[in-house]
Length: 387
Ligand SMILES: *Cc1c(COP(=O)(O)O)cnc(C)c1O
Image 1 (tube, rainbow, N blue to C red):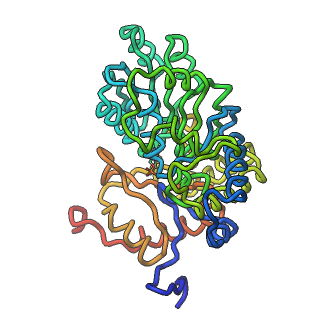
Image 2 (cartoon, rainbow, N blue to C red):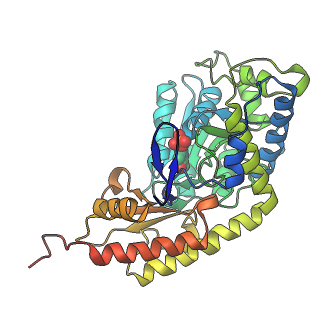
Image 3 (cartoon, rainbow, N blue to C red):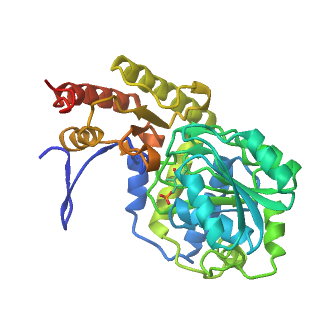
């Protein structure tokens, strides 16, 4: 049978992954994953940890000493940043322009922070003027949180501008770069971002379940001055630091997912080999061919302003009278291609097409456009439109 890998326990299909993540994985990364594990305190593994930290500093464009992968998905990276930076009663301004800003606000609320939100219509970037106004009327704010690339809406916010405003008001920033890292320009140090987290399964094209995090010295100062201990043991950076710190003093905290770290190291080497600028450019170019092809099929982008539109995640309006779920099912089952549904208020209204990392290739764009054309032509017309 074609497109099927035989596994000892069961058979899984091979998919073309063009959704909101996970993205496809380079064969070299899969090979690294399949290496026999070594002990997580083996000197060879400790050496690899140092390499991973250096490669992450390159990917984030930072010199931050505290740069490491959290063992857990992107949301665990989010949790690490908020749990360490916030204490009960701290005031935090959170921008909500999609699912992930909403998730930030929920986390901060559960930590007992005083949460002020600024809201934006889905598909819009965070409005710098609203942030400025919120900080003006809440001068006791300590932290500002926002999402750089909103995967639920396909909009890119101006992280440099937002961080600059936060800094002028003496605030630290928590920035979600889960989808932007290695897909859109990101300069953690130049832009003055403080607690920044990402995920491995989007534009890094690694396995899900690892969350790169980098913390500035300014943020570390606030963490070191906490009056109360970090509320969860697992995410306490003070403890994790002992595990991911310089080789000689390394001590056990938890068992790192060693094979996932093998894979992460290889995926980061590939990013380094290609070069960040080249990777950003590739995402821009290939996504432009997708947008042009979709336009040819009569499909419209939800974010029509190209200057704020994510190249790695295109949100497409579902045309009137089309059963959006039927299209996704046909794409998956007949064509072996995964695209994603809309979330929250966009459910049923949009498709989300990912071109992340290794998935971001011309051949994938061609496959999807061909398949979409077939599926849309074949689809039974919705009953409201039929004679
Ligand atoms: C995917 C994603 C997350 C969550 O990552 P998980 O690995 O699913 O926990 C957070 N923020 C953004 C912007 C994302 O795209």
